[in-house]
Length: 301
Image 1 (cartoon, rainbow, N blue to C red):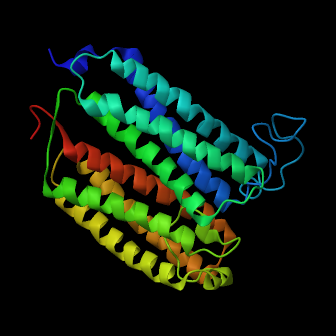
Image 2 (cartoon, rainbow, N blue to C red; image 1 turned 180 degrees about the vertical axis):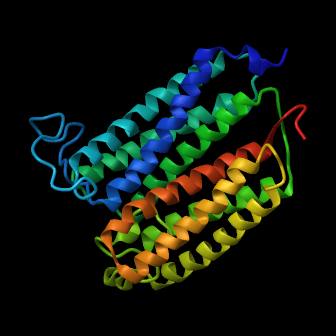
């Protein structure tokens, strides 16, 4: 009997919950930035020194909304305990591959690092560009690690599968992450570029005061990432087990590029929210595609 059919339901659900929470933490973090809600709760972990939750009227749902900040903060705080529970449960599984037992600990570590820098930001303490890059990198690593761990758990017994699709998928994920990290060094003070999104050339005047070389590098990375995503989608489209995420990433890339172009032309603040959230969904879906392409069930072709 395959191990996957003997994995306790509780273990499956905890892994799935941890995966969902890591996605929400990154997606809501991007939404916090795009909606300028990050400083609407100036204390931590409560919203203010005297209140745990926000109070008072909210002028705009997607603009400076303290509830967005608190929802993001809650999901981010829960990532660590959920991943820790998954890691402990995985240690008790017999025959599970190393990815199932190791990667949840990577998520725990990433959540701790991201939480530390997130707290500094909320309290208004200075965070250098490298600190922001470490914060974002840790959050993305936590998300990716939990996705791969969950796919490995659900496909047990699994075998590594190296193919053109898996190689292209991981290349695209790596390049996208590098693009997002470099963007932090290309952003001027208060720039929208600090949000998790694809680069839009000189979106704000503030970006012109930042690193010009970083601007050029991130545009180059964006072009390379787009090509890698499209190539992955094209080569995976005829594989039944990969068709869903393959089509999804292709469609999401088109959506992201459309929002980026529209934002460049209109400079509309209202487009920032869907632009950033679509970017996170694209990255998450590409990680899922990469994991499924790299980890096959024994009888899968």
